[in-house]
Amino acid sequence: MKKLGALVLLLLVFASCGAAEIAQATETATTTATAIETTSTTTETTTTAMTTTTATTTATITTTSTATTAKPPDNAGSAYAWDYPGIAPAVAAVPKDPYLIYVSRDYALPANYSPSLRVCVEDYPEKIQMEATAAKQYKAMYDAAKAAGAELIPYSGYRSVERQKGNFDRLIQTNVNRGHSYAQAVNLAAQVILPPGCSEHSAGLAMDITRPGYWDTRVDFETTKEFTWLVAHAHEYGFILRYPKDKFVLTQITYEPWHWRYVGVGPATEMKKSGQCLEEYLGVG
Image 1: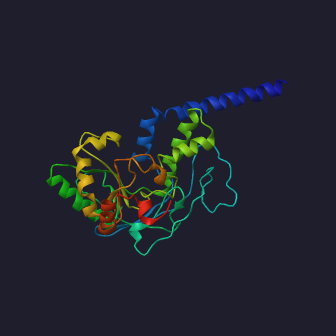
Image 2: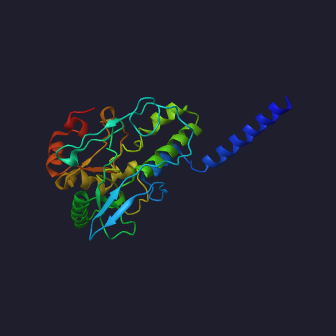
Image 3: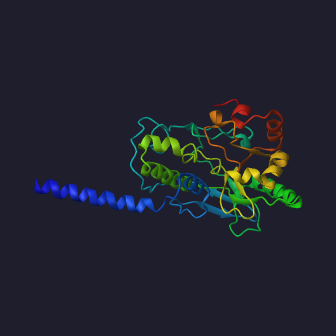
């Protein structure tokens, strides 16, 4: 009995320490979810091979994990590289028009997917990158908006798969700390942050946009002149509002007025005219 009591005491001490360390990452559910999705200071734990040319960088994504969140159950038989209950995406096909690649919680990027990267706007110290063509179009959109009195600050663009995994795991742990089961925590997290390999940021085709005075992404971005300008003109540069307010059933992602996806001018213009989201346009979901 003495040995059993000592073992129980040790387990309680271990659990207490873990909770104290994890608690440092939480504030409020909304703030945490948003900040985790867009933070530019997350430490990456993979090796990302970067070859720099004049204005273009080629990134090779690798996926070596050092996550410290609670161990999820195995998804036996899944081809997906990580074990999350309820998350077992198929590999996304790269279409003839690569800017229409579809990734979501149900479709992950191919393991060898490697976008060529370019800084979008040199004026900011963070040097946020996107896929090269998307970055060029973002700069043209940025210049046009600025001429009209709206400053489209590039907040979070390309994000490595491993960095995405870190963001996703932290939000899962936040949800667990709030009393959800692990499976519930994963499902809730996936409505805010897509699992590793499933994010448009890792494809280099998404940009989270803010404005002067906004130091993170916020739903009230929809009340700004920058958002109004984007709604009216983003399609002219090939960008769409990726997760509209009224399309959650299709996108499975909560409304994000800051998240804009590059698809090309033609498709973006067609979606603008039809009012379709990407799932409707591609006939998926």
